Image (cartoon, rainbow over all chains, first blue to last red):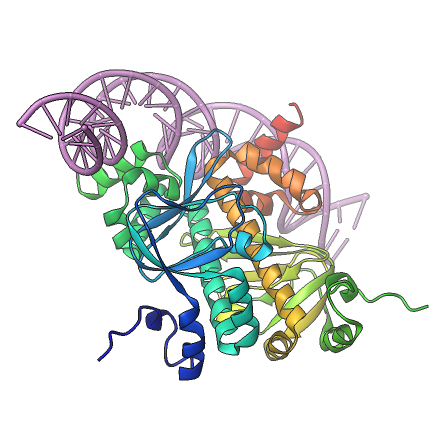
Length: 193
Length: 193
DNA sequence: AGCTTTTCTTGCCTTATGACAAGTTTTATT
DNA sequence: AATAAAACTTGTCATAAGGCAAGAAAAGCT
């Protein structure tokens, strides 16, 4: 019996017919990235997106003082996409970099458009995925205003423990909007130091 | 000669055929809100969205300490929608309230779905609108981390001067993630006090 | 294994912003 | 116009978090 394809976890049998799956899944291309590879660089326009089968990545922007700020983390099952650049066909401000070796499944814009306009369930899911990203970003944004750094860290620990465990402190710090120094002190406080 | 319909500014002739416009525009229903009316309340699921022809509104969430945090402002030409609640059909955490009397054009979820799945240009535009919202939110989110309060205020002043002119200080303050006291001092500093 | 580089921790001091409270100005209501 | 209610300003003091620098620990490299 054949091993089920990773993408069957992304496109589930209860939302897609067998025929649709046979149409969608072969359009994705397996791509492997090595640690530190860039999937997207500032100034370029993103023409592909990926689903992560294995590995970790992060996106970041560089601020006016040259410091980088992590905008997102990606791990198994996540979609790696710069929504704005991909759909508006604009040069991006973001960089997306593999933090470990990664196995991904890639789809290009033209193929996406074909599936999006051709298959109702595909566009329903695409919309849902985008809205979920919007939801996460909104929550993070509100948390930046409503919560202190300690609280934001606790939420991350609860929501994405695998990120906290696998990503370096400095990247997590900029994601949470604190310095690495402060985050180190927060960790000390939590561990009861 | 007939006055052009407001929605012709939203659905422009270069992106929609005459036939499509005749199909889309009559589906919207004119709705008038009075100052302080709620368009959406926490706990409810949003079943309509609106384009603003005239007036101002804001959305906000209430944090764990009972303070409200403004998440967005809406004015002429803007879409008023809670993307998450509308598309995921979930109860919302947001409140949307008219800050002045408002004239809006309303579309319900079922009619939206019909147009979205039936008209290619309508779904292209819908996707673009959502991505633009994502872009704004991302910029605001990065600015919360990268910029000090003074800088965030200057950006708002530059990007949305009509908001700064028409909305009360306390609402702008929570939107920028500062107290009204601090924002008052920021204004003093800018005016050269 | 030894060396280098990166990551993380800790101390000391500074700074942006918050908390609270009093007063002033503006807006709404009768 | 008079009163009440919001909105805004300003002062004093408190605090979360940053800046900088030194050192410790861990990871990567030859």
